[in-house]
Length: 456
Image 1 (cartoon, rainbow, N blue to C red):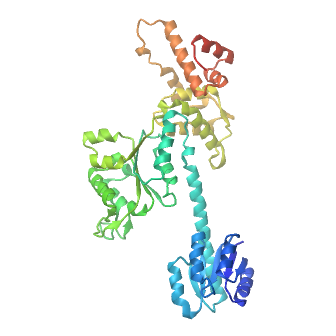
Image 2: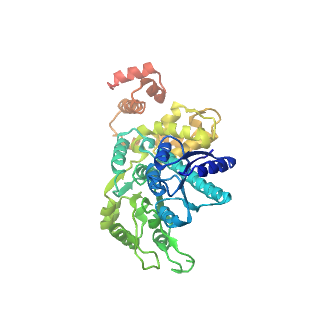
């Protein structure tokens, strides 16, 4: 039930309005002065303020200004007599929702209040949604304990509060967009738009219109003016994914926008100021692209203020068990619930850790989702994994790279030692878990640790 604060130094108006509001299902509190109103606002939950303009001490306009300092979103409706309409209009420019002339019809007042509260609820819901999204994309939610990932966390923490451009490089499926969102939602621009454009998804002519917008009649089919992504991302962040695919002519135009912070729509002549933070991502090495003449060097240096390189999953295999558990939880809980799986067999973890993951984290996620859906019990076993992943385990050893004069015993001992070292690393030096990964008993693992002089 919404609570409305009525502020008026006249005795009858607050009482009458309070009775009307009660009939309509609202609760209300009253104040006879601006100071009293501010005291109530600081101590009670108020959904709307209805205030007179003329009051002794603090006027309704001054009260409005104070309210906006406390809560800029709360709607304020100004009540005014005919002689104060000019002041009421001025109040609109200072953030009042609307004004209503005394004396007023009850239905008119209720219509204004209902609409104002409806808008306020939407604003509140959007705020809650933004907070939820910010939490979802905090750097704490990027999964990984490996040294490269820890370094990435530190970079995000430092770069997020700034307005610096960031360039994210990494293979497809490594999580470049997740890093971009983490930067945005931990920045001062987090309450403004994050606009995503995949540069490889449009042909050049369409991409120009998508970025810059166009005026009505700029080309065949342009029946109305359209704002581009530069304008839409004003005060927020523009994320250009796969920027390595940006055609050279558009690279020139992007450079100019970054330098001048002005754009012109396609077919237009008016310069429009834009204020956005740019984050770019690519699965290419842009330094190599510059050397090949495929990417402008001046644009590269403009983008490369802060570079974040995300390593492929095969280079941080110690993160795989964490990611496995994360995806199992994701696809067995809440809206993503897809099966009864609650855990994974250590042998299956071992297979997943040994796989090369050309599709990186995205491929691993798809594999776990598939296993959760198709699994028959509450445990993911090796048989629940795709055949191509299971068979890769037998081809990960480079037998051709073993010298011809090295004997079988030496080779097997070297392989055994490396597997034990990896199992200890993956398990965080917990011998019970390491033994499970290796498929041996804890006592057997103890003997092998002593045999190979492996610290634990």
